[in-house]
Amino acid sequence: YQRRVRGAEAHLVARQIADANVGIVLSPPRCTRSSFESLRCRRDRVKLLIDAGVSKLAIGNLETETLRGLRIDVGHEFARGRLSELAALRSFTSIPAQLFGLDEHGVGSIVVGKSAKLTLYAGHPLVVGSSVALVVDRQRRRCVPDEAPYDGFDSYRGHH
Image (cartoon, rainbow, N blue to C red):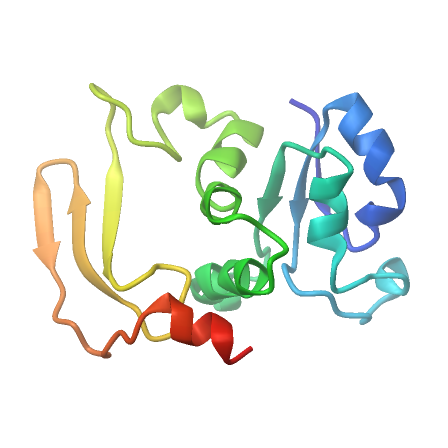
């Protein structure tokens, strides 16, 4: 698959991206006007890309020190109605795996007979305050104590 990484101004050519069926990885997920390449970045660029028909939209972060907050960045787009729940979850699981050719190895999805690493959350995984409850990697299981109370996604969406 052809793919582009960064995409700060991808919304400007969203129709062309959709027509070419090219995958895109938005990185960083939140819009910042920190360089010449991002001067026309818009906060609603995710929604503009989806509305134009871009189906291979991944959200990532090339900065490893902030990668742990990726699910929260994606949750930010979901909470503001820019991504559906399914599109949000796929944007950092199955779509990047597909774009980088890892889906053939079972990465990014749960498939019978393939190896998987599964993380279960206490609470909605796209919400600040949810926590990892269980990690399953091949035959190993690791329980993680619930460190933060979860008050439900509806209350989060209502406050932002």
